[in-house]
Image (cartoon, rainbow, N blue to C red; front, side):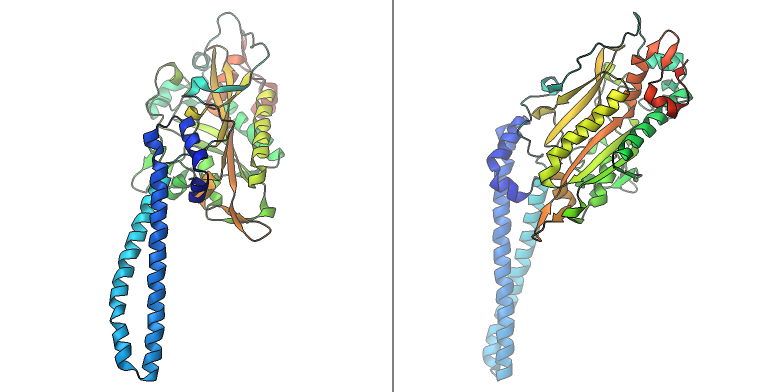
Length: 426
C-alpha cells in the first residue's frame, strides 16, 4: 500500500494517478478520508501520550510525598489516577479503532503510477512499446489452431482434463508433457545462467502472504481458497517468492536480490468466456517461471529494463513473433507502478496472446511486506520489488505449436531440442 507520508506529501500525484486509472472524484475522495483519519490517529496518539506522561508524573509525585510523610496530599493526588486510567482506556480503544479504519482504507488505494503510464480505459488503449517488424511464420494455407493440433498429435487431452477436474484444466501427455517440461527447464536454466537464485516455494499461502503482495483484498474472487485451513492456492509464483522477504530488514550491500522459481498457478478466471478461453488461451491451472527482484529504490527502473531484456531474449531464442506493450492506467494491476506485457502471435488463430507481465511495484508491496533496508547513515527505508513472467507456459505452448506446424508435424524450436530429446512432434 502507499505509505501514509507519501500519500500526504504527494497528494496531487496520487490523485492524478487515480484519475489515470479511471477513478471518479467520489472514489478519489478516499484520499481526504485517509488524511482526516491520519490526523485523528495523530491526535489520539498525542492525547494518549499526554495522559500516560501525566500518570507517570503523578505516580512519581505520590511516591515522593509518601516518603516525606505527606499522606493527605498524596491521597488527594491519588484521586486523579482512576480518572486518568479510564481516559487512557478510552483513548487506547479510540486509537486502535482509528488505526484499523485507516489501515482498511489504505488497502483500497492502488499504487501510484509512474509518469510514463499512458491514459486509457482498458486493453485497447495500451501503448505498443515495441512492435514485431518481421514477417509472421508461413504455416500453410489451412493452419490448425493449437487445440486441433493437440488432438491430432495426441499431446494435450482437453476433454479428459475436464473429466478429471473441469474445464480449463488441460491434461498434457507424451510429447506434449515433454515439451512443457522442456520449456520449464529452458527458462530456469536461462535465469540461473543470468545470476538468479532458484527457489522452489510452497504452492499454498496464508492470508498474510496474499495480503502482503496485494492479492488481498483486490483479487480475492480470482483465487482458489481452502476454507478449512485458511490457505489460498497461489495465482502466481510472485506471491510466495516475494514473501520470503516479509518482515525483513536488509543491508544496502544485500542488493540486488534476484530469484527465479517455477510454480503451478491457479486462477479462477471468473467471467471469462468466448474464443479467449479456447484450448490453452485461458486456463485455470498452468505452469509459470517467475523472476522476482528485491532492489534498491535508486536502481529499480534500471532493473526493470534488464528484466525486459531477459524476457525478450527468451522469445528471440524460441523464434516466436512478439511485441511489447506498455499498459495504460485503466489496464494496470492494482499493485503496479509500471507494467510491460509481452505478447506472442498465434499465427493460426491470428491473435496476440499475453505470455508475460513485467512490473515495478516500487515501494507499494514493500510497505505491506515491511521489507526494509538500512542505508549507510543507519536510516531505515522501504525497498523496491519487481517481478516478471519468464515465461508463462500455457500460451507459450499454444504459440510454439501453432507457429511451428508443417505438413509433416510440428517442428520443435532448436533451442528446446536438447531438452525434449526429439526434433518433431508427429
